[in-house]
Image 1: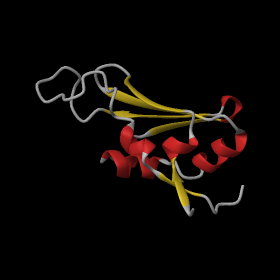
Image 2: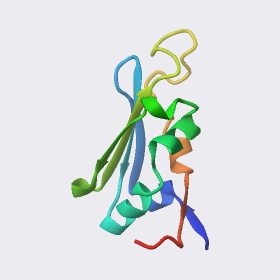
Image 3: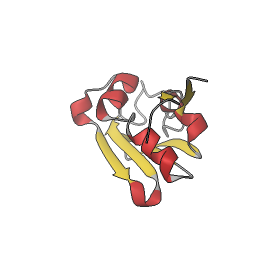
Image 4: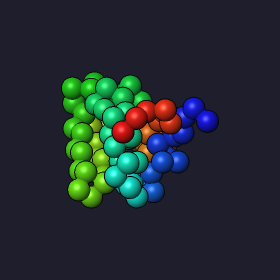
Length: 107
């Protein structure tokens, strides 16, 4: 098997709103090795590409002591506005969970 997805590697991938203007993604890992594999792939550029946002506005927080990756970026529309299709951002983790992670990377 050449690759897995972030969702398969992580113990939990979730999304939530961070106020009416920002969205947050959290990814939790069981081992340091899994965290290291993911941290090499989950970048501001990757988040920008997946969520069609400018990588310069993505805030990526790497928390190796607790094996968590966190990314925040502006919501595409204001929470609760007429164009908002996911008011609580509860379904926004799916593109990140589908991110391919190579099994051949050395860590």
